[in-house]
Length: 118
Length: 111
Image (tube, rainbow over all chains, first blue to last red):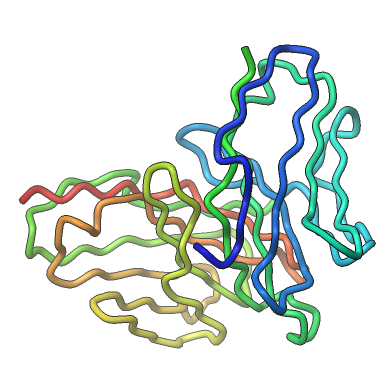
């Protein structure tokens, strides 16, 4: 998992604060995906980004959540005015740049950010 | 929507035993992936399958892409303590990059 870097590994916020989660994809990967995992469950797709573009955010809540992947720097998942229900592990994945539409190319995951809301 | 059901949900086995688990769907998948997740870490790709009927090995792990394209199987031979973890099947929803993850099989190995 060392290839996809996420930070922080653990993040504690109080209700109403903002949470920023960062993800640097593997070298040479320009497709980034964010997933959320609740305890004892599988990962759920949130958003898919390429450099400077949001391709699909259909899995992301309409309010308070946003994501970006700027030309320079890591991808950021931002959660505003956090609530207790936002507590979860958030994983970022990346896939290769030159693999067609990317649908069949394996995504490689980081070790996640565990967000706890007090 | 598409769902992936894994069985068994959990299993305890003795070290040295072989393990089998499967993943089924009500709809067709064109790619099947098997990941392992250890506590506090992200999923690690074990095997990727791209063709119906395909049988692929990775060390002691063997996975098969079912010919109906609605199921996949993972076998672990001669299990060892470090095989403990959660095994997820996953696949992209039809024609997209969005992965659906299965419900997971939790494996515990008794030394």
